[in-house]
Image (cartoon, rainbow, N blue to C red; front, side, top):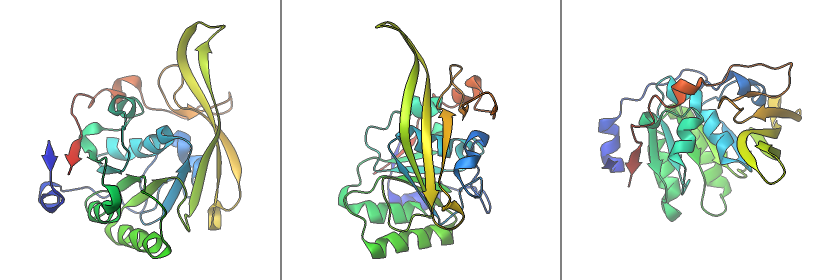
Amino acid sequence: METTLSALAAQLRPSRPGPLVPVLPALHDLLPERGLRPGTVVSVGGDTSLMLALAAAATTAGTWCAAVGLQGLGLVAAAELGVALDRLLLAENPGERWPEVATALADAVGIMLLRPTGTVAGPLAARLPAVARRTGCALVVAGPWPGAQVRLDVVDRSWVGVGQGRGRLRARRITVASGGRGAAAVGRQTQLWLPDADGAIRRAGPAHRAAGVPAQARYAAAERGPLAVV
């Protein structure tokens, strides 16, 4: 289904998640407030799957999510990571108009996954978060963003299941380096299964057994496609 930005506001009645946009328990330690605060920018480097995982809990709870500029986004992979596709808006190729598209959608969704085109200028880097703060939208950006409050970088990844030239990929373990400003300034590294052998997202290591997304829940909305924005 396709729609225009001008008609979007009339179609959506987005639920706002409140002071914080929720994330999966396994991802709490990546964020200083254990959730995403509207108007703040979380910069993610090196892994689109981590961006999708950050949107899983919110969309499952009924919050609308927009993916802007994420060309070639794998919808099956998004569903497997817990994103509710019937709460996902796609603007895959906004081109140079991505600032206008992102600003318009920030008024309709509770979380936005954004890949900017080109360099982000200082005035825009301040203006879009201001709009998102006013409308109640959290921003998760692929790559660097001037003044981002939180920075998450996937610095290592490995797959489990492949032996000596044979086998089946069953689980992926990643190491995430986090940093940023304010409460996020103290850098740390966190290891995650994204996903584990059962398809869940959880902390790696025997001491951390945070709950992930049950396998059956990941496919509950897989047949309901996202809404494309043109």
